[in-house]
Length: 423
Ligand code: GDP
Ligand code: IMO
Ligand code: MG
Image 1 (cartoon, rainbow, N blue to C red):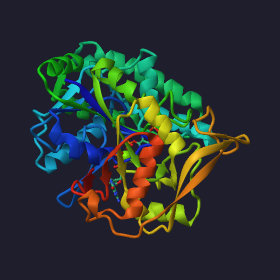
Image 2: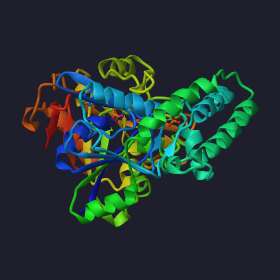
Image 3: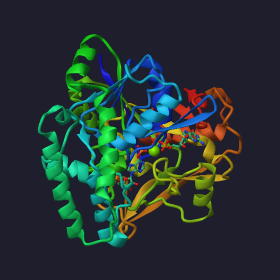
C-alpha cells in the first residue's frame, strides 16, 4: 500500500487542514511529518471553526489513527492546550492519537532563543512565529535535542537542565531585551509534559511499516509550504524543516518508493505571512481586497497575510520539486468580482525573461510578467458541482492545468467541509 502526501505549494496557509479533513474518510491513518506549532490548520464543519497546530487534521474522525511523526517538533504546552480543546468538543483522542518517540521537544528556552534571535536581527528578522521552531531544529541537527522517548530515561532531567542552562547563556549572548521568568515557564512545561507522557508513545516508523504491510492507507499531512522549505524555499526567509515531499520520507521513516499520490494544494492567488521576497505581492487596493474577502490573517499569530496574484513560476517549481501528481485549488470564491485576473507566467530576471525560479527572487532581481485572464462575478460558495461553475472560472482552471501540466482534481469554494467540488 502506498502513502499519499498532501503538501502546500506556496508560502503556507493554502488550506491544507480543510482538505486533509475532507480526505480523511478515504484513509486509515493521517500523519504529520514536519513542522510544529508554527502551523495553524483550520477546519470548518457544522458551523464551527477549529484550528489545529501540531495534531493532524484527521483527528475529528474518531475511527481514524492520527500520528505525530518523528520529523515534528512538539511544544508540550501548546500540545496540551490543543488536547484540552478537543476534550471540550467531546473528541476522544486517547486511542486515535499516536506520538513518535523520536519527535523532538520544544523547550521553553527554545522559544526564548527564537525571540532573542529575531530581536537581534532588527529589520532583517525572518518574521518567525516565535514558537521556537528554528532553535529546536538547530538542536536536533546539532545532536543536542531532547526527544519524546528521552522522557522515559532516568537521566533525562539532567539532560534538560544542561541544555536549558546552555540556552540561557546563549540568550544573554544575544544582548537583547527578552524578559522571562524561567521557573514559571518550567512549571507549565513540566505539567504539560505529564499529559504528553500519558499519550500513546510509539516507534512510529515500525508502526507505519507494519500498517502498510497490513494494507492500511496513509495520508501524510504537510505543514507550511514548499517556498518555506529549508532547502528549496526563499532562504533565509523560510522555516527550519523540509516541507517538500522528501520531508515525508525522513519525517515518517517511509521509503521513497512507497510514495503514491502527491497532492499539491494552492490558493487561486498567493499569500505570505512574515518577511521575505514575494514577486507578485500587491500593495494596493486589489491586495487589500483579497486580504479582506479571504480573511487573510494568520491562524497561529493573527498577523495579516500579504496578498498578491498567482505566481505560476513559483508554483511550477513547487510541483517539480515535490513530484506533484494532482492539484487542489483553494479559495476560488475570493477572486469573484475582479473584472480581470492576472497570473504571473514568467519573470523578468535582470533584463531577460525566464520561466524558472532563480537563486534569488528579491525585488531588485525579479519582476513578474503577467498573462491576463477574464474574471467572473458569481457567488461560488453554494456550488457543489463543476457544471455550476462560471465559464471564466473554468477557463482560469484550464489555463492553470495547461501551464502546470497537471490536473486540478478538487476546487474549494469556501472554508466549510461541504464547500468542496470534486472534478
Ligand atoms: P493551512 O495552514 O494550509 O491549513 O491553511 P489555514 O487554515 O492557515 O488558512 C486557510 C484559511 O482559508 C482558513 O481560514 C480556512 O478556513 C480558509 N479557507 C479554506 N478553504 C477556503 C476556500 O475555498 N474559500 C475561502 N473563502 N476560505 C477558505
Ligand atoms: P501552515 O502549516 C504560513 C512562516 C513564518 C515565517 C517563517 C519562519 O499553517 O501553513 P518559523 O516560526 O517556522 O520559524 O517561521 O515561516 N511560517 C508560516 N507561514 N503558514 C505556516 O504554517 C507557517 N509556519 C511558518 O511566518 O515567515
Ligand atoms: Mg495555516
